[in-house]
Length: 339
Image (tube, rainbow, N blue to C red; front, side, top):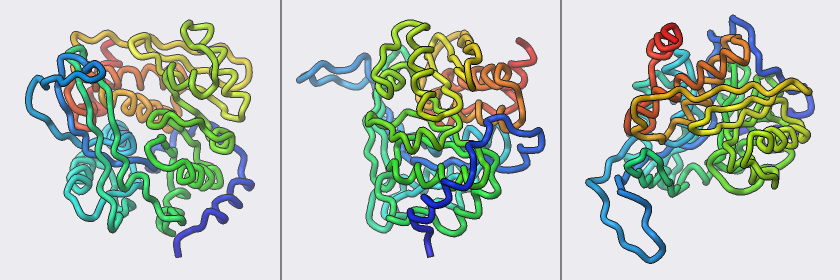
């Protein structure tokens, strides 16, 4: 029988929050990703339409594999060699199976993905401007319609075999809470990407996370504090840490990122890598988060982990699409060696 939420709640009390720093032997264990699986339907537009305006697209639509969960699983697989995706697709359409085919091509183990009998697969409508910036509208579908008891016995077992657990906010929070409780019980660090939903995070989920990674806008929304300056970003991140999370990793777009770690440690700033041309930022944040998780799972110190993740993301933004833009490990290592 599927595990109950009551059981998940009881597991949360039996383990302390694991450290994000892992041993060098960890990469033999897969990175677990619990999250969304979407078909990304991309429309090239010269700009976003104003209210009441009809705007012609610059060309035909393009459909790519995506969803924050699937993207992070694919990025982790390409960067580390092993990842397992836990999520849902619709049983009645081809969108979900197409995404899984792409994910499998990246090396992702998708055997823990379930098919919802009635819901459609998730879809994301992405308005891509000529600058490479994007705006996204999400159709949740099966990503939002998890059963009351979300995880099978096979998924429970997977948590005991993982090196890291990645979560996002394109699935219900109760599912994330249950996943974080299972991970914590197994001594597996949890990284939560704060992207995907505008609603507040519960204190329960925050306290179960080892690291939370918002961008500046998400950080401001989560804390109610301004994030217009570097000092404000650090202050807001420290405020978030008072709720029980060990690390806050803030993505700053073209300015790079900053990690506010345990205790009163000084923030670690990592500038962005300059690229010849930004083609498409879709999935870059997912690539960054997965890259950071991979580097931590391999035991790299925080400074090197941030650089690894930043280089991976810089390669991703130079190709259109989310999953198909994710770099191979060899490309990241080559760029780091040349730096």
